[in-house]
Length: 309
Image 1 (cartoon, rainbow, N blue to C red):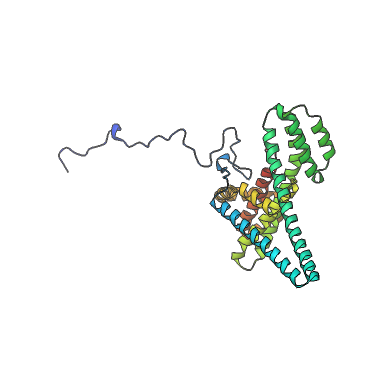
Image 2 (image 1 turned 60 degrees about the vertical axis):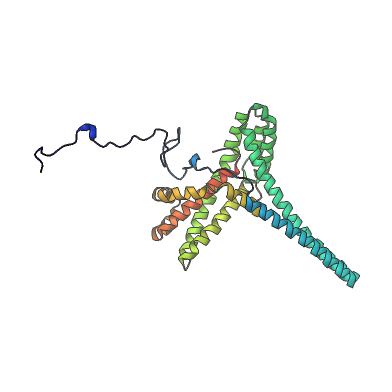
């Protein structure tokens, strides 16, 4: 030991942590104006991903489809012509069969385009409702058209239609759609999510191997997306389901959040579904899968509704 004795650091040399930036975002920090509660309704806007346009894969798929369509047309024409060279009757039969097949394909394509058009109309109505009172009449017409599509799923669609006709402004129009149309549909979408979670949990509990769990939950989740889309007046063909799954792709990030908060979310979900509580007690992972399907149904309903929740 030196003669100077032990040396002590003074306050000026004490290591202090660097101050955090005020603007730095904090994970799981509630948004301004929110209630500060992170539960099954948690849906931070920071997780919203941009919607990109057509990428290289999209152009490659379009090009492949064009080549396939060209090959199909030329092959069909060559086949029919060859059969007519052999026999007039055989050529007529082959022509009728080809026309019937192409007609079915064309009808399927028409249904998909009509479904995409209905989904685009929902986006258009959402933009009109977010505008000014100058957009009142176009918004009223689009609102009545959307109400006509979802009328079979409502208890009193006629009264809602009369209220839409008498609305004096966009704020009143939004309130009518939110209270008389969107809210009842959202309640039914929540029931669809709870039923999907119960069915998926029951099916997974009976699967002979754990590798089947993801397939069962994925297929039931796709079915829930289709049911919710049909509930909101869309025509859930493959194209519509694909677009919806792209739009709600941020659910994968929210699933990561659900993993971090699985206990709280699962407990809240199971409290509203007593029949699932006993299954989840035996297979704890099934409660998390059920909560994910419930959340997926709610997110799909928000995407299909022109009125924000």
